[in-house]
Length: 325
Image 1 (cartoon, rainbow, N blue to C red):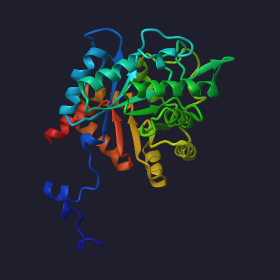
Image 2 (cartoon, rainbow, N blue to C red; image 1 turned 180 degrees about the vertical axis):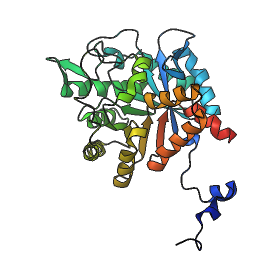
Image 3 (cartoon, rainbow, N blue to C red; image 1 turned 135 degrees about the vertical axis):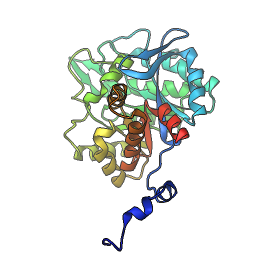
């Protein structure tokens, strides 16, 4: 195909033609909206480093869920800030914990909402790490049972899906076995299968009050330099019973999303993380970019790379933009 016999512009001259041959589509159905839940009542506080994103008290979740559903966003993922923290993250699996109460509130006020829960200990430990500490090290194996109990407590409270983000080896198998032993065979696991030790998480750590109090998470999260390792991590989680594989972050790791899409036939999720969100917001506030258009193009690129599902703080903004295009 050579010019002038072939002219690609023929199929670009108006929106009808462009939409007719469009390869990638983005809709609110593809989006999961993260919600931060904190103690208190009648609280909706904006997160300084994440304009437009808030921490909610449990009693305010119903209104936020209703707004999401009006926009066509029918899935949320919950992150909790407990009243107290301790060395073993006991608040993560407390029967009356912040997330357990949030799940029940959403199921009561927004019964059609698909409620997913993040399963990790970093928000609940006083040291801010994702696992238990033994001899000054994050101990993988002793953490597994706590993670499984946490996932089980979420499901007993009414969660529709659990999403382990801790990056402990073997945690998907432990959670799957625990759920199955308790007759929750039909609860899916969306695994943070490929989670990098990224600098893009900064605003989230403010939002969830989950920064490590010593060291870093490089000992259990993936090295940003590695690509082949992503296949090993994802394969392990598939073998252990994961139903959805997630890549985190998204924009800086589009190559990883694409490679996993080619390798695995499970649904692929990607987390458009806090730093990626905050950069767009900051540039838009400066007037340097059209924030809505850049946000939409960014999410579209994540879909184009191969993600079936996108977790994003831009979900509501994106849904409004799509309604008005």
